[in-house]
Image (tube, rainbow over all chains, first blue to last red; front, side, top):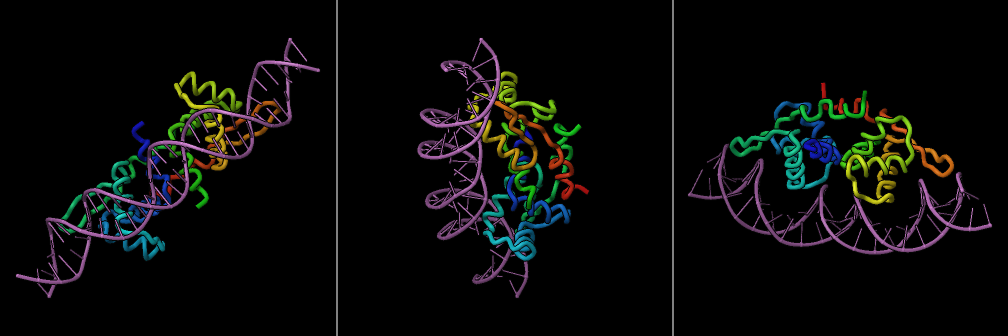
Length: 90
Length: 90
DNA sequence: ACAATACGCAACCACAGGGTTGCGTGTCAA
DNA sequence: TTGACACGCAACCCTGTGGTTGCGTATTGT
């Protein structure tokens, strides 16, 4: 099942918070995201930990990332989310 | 976040299979479900393991259970699933 | 040129979680 | 009444994973 990664990605509360932030802004650097999470959501975790979460979100197809100079640009993608629960709803 | 349990419940492929089976039949005993999973999906895991999964699904509100004599009746509930991804889709 | 910045990578740690085995118990049919 | 049956409970094991620290590196402004 290829959306196994999506369900796994959604299982962690920190990653869901990250998606909240990412879905509100079309484009954002990892640095910005990290700052916002700490400021607005009192997330007290290291940058490296957040980077790992982003990797998982990217593998799940929920986030696209592109290296732009010094920064890593992040783009939210809701496609894997659409109709993911349809198999149980009729 | 109270739907944390829902996301956690959906993170495991075996539990998603169980939901597949449960959503197709309104009512079912744990025994029936176990049998079906082994027959139709080649799930080779113990009864106790499946019972643990059911407990988690129940805590998430995705399954209701009622002891009826010797059997444990299971009822699927799709309510926690509805619009669970809405926060990221607009 | 140089130092601060934004990030990648790797090793390590603690614990949650999926699985098992073993045993006990209430229920029901013969 | 007795034995098979459907299930609950608990201890245990091993792996996955979320977190950390430490270090290296390309990029950038001054």
